Length: 160
Image 1 (tube, rainbow, N blue to C red):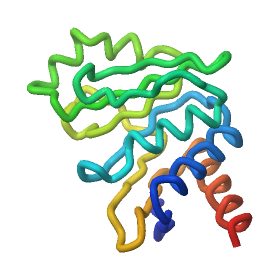
Image 2 (image 1 turned 135 degrees about the vertical axis):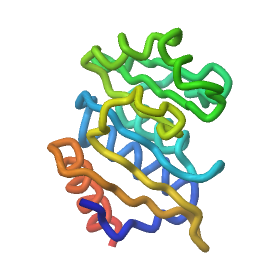
Image 3 (image 1 turned 90 degrees about the vertical axis):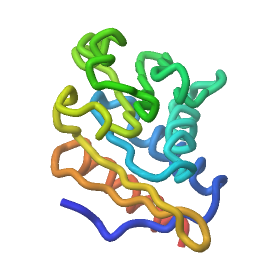
Image 4 (image 1 turned 120 degrees about the horizontal axis):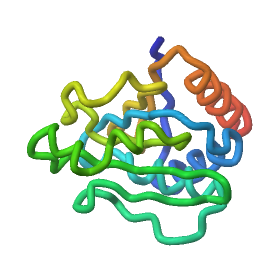
């Protein structure tokens, strides 16, 4: 199921919305695929989410490292950026199978570069440029997707 999207006006609003999601949803384990052009706000979403979980350290883009992992209290979050992946088989050497077996939350940017190495996501978020900010569109039907939709609707109501 896909929704019509939510317009988020600027980077600060993206950070606040993502922090709200982190506070509201906690660290429910699952796989979230992040789609969007360069600069669409994928890493901003993860940074805000981690802040909402209470993580105070630096949140780096994994563009060059491919994986950045964080411990936010009892929650483990792995942030992967597969943009620079030359071949999906590189994921074997990065320990992807181990990460997928953990009870962790995985945010995966550019998941299409993984070929068939990734199982289906629990949630997909499509981010894009809009005239006055960014839009977020969610796609998914499971518990994690439903929880994210409910938290987004709550945030949207609270902002009115």
